[in-house]
Image (cartoon, rainbow, N blue to C red; front, side, top):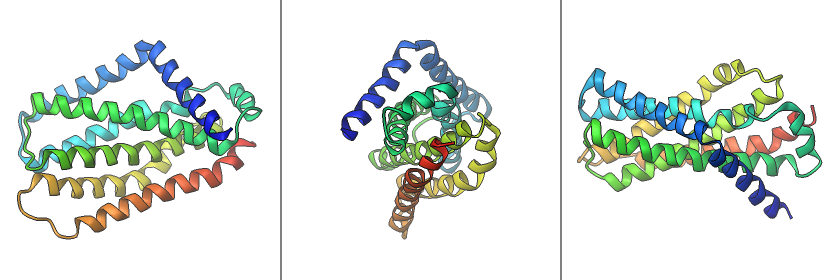
Length: 218
């Protein structure tokens, strides 16, 4: 029953996103404009600068696409969802929807970076995997923050206040992990960063599952 409800909620969000194409295309336009501005300002930078610019772009994309997952829901609609599904199921459905959306935006960003800013990667497949893991990490964090902001009288300012201490270490770990794919020289200790990042993702999801039912009842 819970699995069926989870699939139905994810499908509902994806259908709404597809039907409201102006929202989806608006995000794609934002991604394209951001990468183009980066190109106009920096041209084709060296590898480490390219890496830093890519993750900053991912941060801005996450804020403008994933973070709205809960904030776009009408407050009264939560009462309707309350009668249908468990709060943990609702939160996980939003996280899965956000992950799918962020993965698409990450692939679009990588393609645009390849076209405009060059491709200074020694191990392309590894970087794509790291970018996918980064999409999952940013999606989990911002979906959780969006849930808190939505249940706190739609106060989006909470996302900026709570997001900075959570997102900063995630971006630092992702940037350091990506150096493994950029540098042709072996980077020791990268697997420790990878395990730490996965543990942080699991912690965010676990905290969301534990804490969201209390926000849900408010």
